[in-house]
Image (cartoon, rainbow, N blue to C red):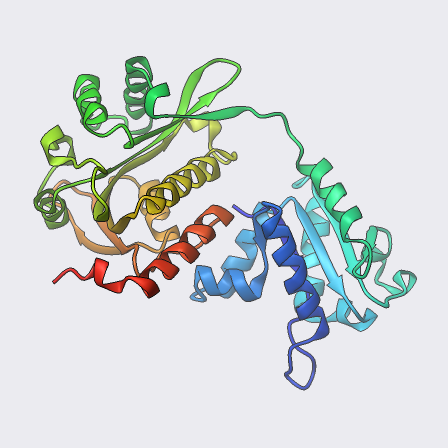
Length: 357
């Protein structure tokens, strides 16, 4: 999910890249390095895909809490895309759709008194010397008490696993679930498979991911669409004991219904990306990944990550797959971007490690 939307005019009338574009790109780079999830159309749409430009813009506008309008000329504020974006964002603030929304301008050589009224009355920061002040404002806006924490490896207890299975019963009501004791066998076989999100105030498990490297035979059984993954046994799971490339089964990402549309998804995906990077430091990599989407939300998540549907299963679900190296996955937050950059570099240096012949 995006936190900040950068609005700017991409090209000048002669079709060349505008000065606004270069200023916006520098701002985007700084904010990404600061840890924010930023929508910058030139980069974000390229990474997300261009199949539906308008919908991607609308989605980003809906998600963002802050919009920064970059301007090096008063006239740029009147361009169609820029004016549509800040008008829409301003309207959402006024109509209490975004009660905490904030709109800023980031300008160079612009008399702000000459800007359209909706931009004239917002906080402005100068491009040449105002970034630090802008950064401080953003820190205050996004400052929030830490509500959740990640639990992993030796921190995980059998009670946590039982809580996750109970969560499955809520999210996947009416479906068959794996017994917690079997899940414990999986965990004992490979303690890297689980990532849990715990609500700090209650010590309650409110979300988790389950990913595991599997044998080639197990991977192909899953891929056929005829194998129920609830039938996976611990001997089908691999450990990350040797350097090399692994095939991963993405069992699930589960979030308690009352905590959806929070930072939990980004937290879990960020923790998973961090884990993959730590494994890469040990020369252990994920070559490809498969998922069995049994819900509409699962399908949407797979498609968000740019996984490709490969077949429908005999148990009324959809199978998705993606090549991790060379990376084909979509960047959906800064942690995933770091992983993608790392995997690109690894493939350029050691392509022979990922040859499946």
